[in-house]
Image (cartoon, rainbow, N blue to C red; front, side):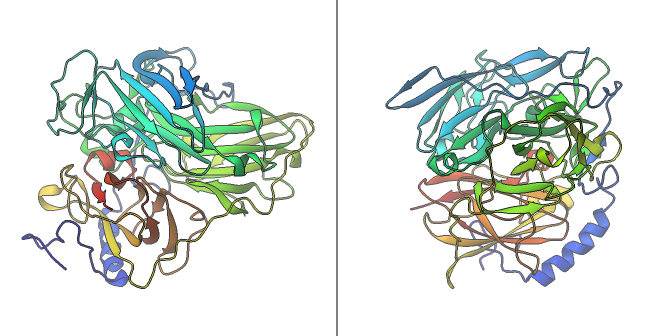
Amino acid sequence: MVVDPTGRPAAGEAVSLSRRSFLGGLAGTAVLMGASGCGSSRGQTAELLASATALPTRFVTPFSVPPVKEPVRRSAAGTAYEIVQRPARVEILPGLTTEIMGYDGSFPGPTIRARRGERVTITHRNTLPVPTVVHLHGGHTPADSDGYPTDLVLPSSGRFPHGGPMGHGGATSRGARDYVYPHDQAAATLWYHDHRMDFTGPQVWRGLAGFHLVTDEVEAALPLPDGDRDVPLMIMDRAFDADGALRYPSLDPALLGRPGVGPAYASGVLGDVILVNGRPWPVMEVDAVRYRFRILNASNARRYRLELDPPPTEGPAFTQIGSDGGLLAAPIEQTAIQVAAAERFDVIVDFGCYPVGSEVTLLNTWGVGSADAVMRFQVVRAAPDESSVPATLAVVAPLEPGPDARVRDWRFVQGTGSRQGQWTINGQVFDPLRMDAQPRLGEVEIWRFYADLHHPVHVHLSPFQVLHRGTGGPGDYDHGWKDTVDLRPAEMVEVAVRFEDYAGAFMLHCHNLEHEDMMMMSAFETTR
């Protein structure tokens, strides 16, 4: 193994380390750091930021879904959209207005719907007072449209010089940028969000997130619930000031200079208001039939364990049909859904198992206080239901690393010494000009992720398959194609990954957005 003068592995070198020795060291680290972020809510590495206003009454706000964006044109060459990133004032808490950063001024942004193989160009226009970057999370996307964190879209106002306020360079543009998505991938629940270096956390917190849904012929041929029974659920937590403004502990609230949050929130930020599609603890009227819910955890740091109260008298609470990267090979019955930041789960809930008039609450059993519930369903009427959940959903070919497959180890650990308060990967903080690995396109590699605390690990460009969690096989929520995996304290997860089609610079990082902003990112370059 090649090492640099500090004794760390050189860029691009795999770290050879036994699981037992590394996890033993991490267990001690987790004990020493256990007080950091673990007291606010169960199952979290984050701290609670309480609202300064009275919390709204739960389960009275009507549920809604984000609007579907209409294209500006369709042609044989593809489909074109325009989205304006702009400030807006919206009502989130009843009776108060909140200033947001919104895609088209909405919270969350409009939903993009696309078909497999459809070439979509989205022109993002930045009329905000800060630079932005757009990342299509889960998208199989060329490097120049992937949302590398220094590929800034500068404000149209001309306030910033070329290269942006932090001087990191990158392929910047002024006022607008075209993002091109070939959609050469299976049907999946994707989402788009801001990815600006050092400031992703506060800019997503203020509203820069939206759904991006891809369908294909395989999905369309299945008798799954569709239409208004195919429902996206963007779940997030937020905190509010007395006047309705969003609270967030930025060191620079203007998001122009010093990045990061106050030391008390370095482990991550939790809010005490749970929003679904931008509504606090909403109530949704449903028929006594099957519904498909596309669950997205769009929180900065919070992890959820979702359960139904009461559970159905017969059958599973949830039938999982999909994961981050699309449909599973076969449905899986789940009593609960555990979802870390940025993960997605496609599930079927059969309200036909409840009498008309029932109220069913979607609980968060990892939450305490106001965060212990997410939303409520009211079963209001009987209705015909022609949907079903077939025993076979899609072909999910296993990734099988060969005996000579390259192995790369990635350690997600809080910094020490001069890097105290920062978060590191393999002992290094993010440098956008440094490539830490150079995987070859088309080759299956084994990547091992090690953690000190909770880290939802996200890999750009191509999805992966979980091979091992600790010394066992995949966990209960690791099935199918994943692009984000819930890495728990003192744990190792091993995945198989194969990058395809697009050469260039891509990202690997923790999707606890406070960790990401405080340098828990790594760049890799795919090569031919």
